[in-house]
Image 1 (cartoon, helix red, strand yellow):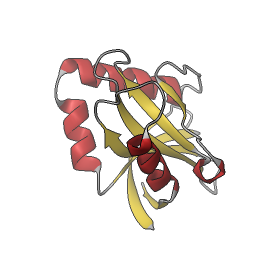
Image 2 (cartoon, helix red, strand yellow; image 1 turned 120 degrees about the vertical axis):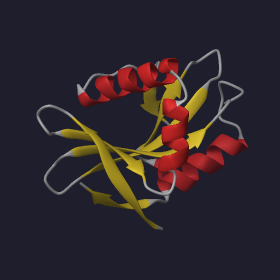
Image 3 (cartoon, one colour; image 1 turned 180 degrees about the horizontal axis):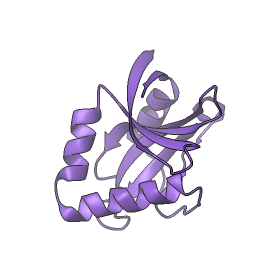
Image 4 (cartoon, helix red, strand yellow; image 1 turned 180 degrees about the vertical axis):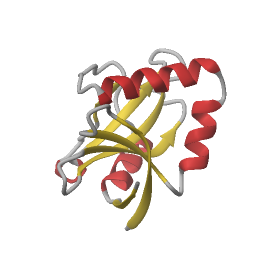
Length: 133
């Protein structure tokens, strides 16, 4: 399924970029912009990603089987709201590493992925993106 993604942030050296799924952009941006706490957390997570650092507490792989390679999640407020933005990682032809914020999932209930999360992860894994600068 071909979808469009729009660039929203890029690392200083241009080797990493954050995009957002065009169809889900409104919902994702509303979630991020709802208050200062959400804006700060999103900025923190994207700074880690763009800096090339690893922090599995806030951003980690969600590869639950062979079909879900490259699916990750931005984790907002673990132990509280426990919301997720499921993402897809791709590398552009020019070797730019791209993370596409694809699907918002509010209120993940358990530590383990339930069927609802698995369905979202498989859906994101099936997306193919056209990247817009």
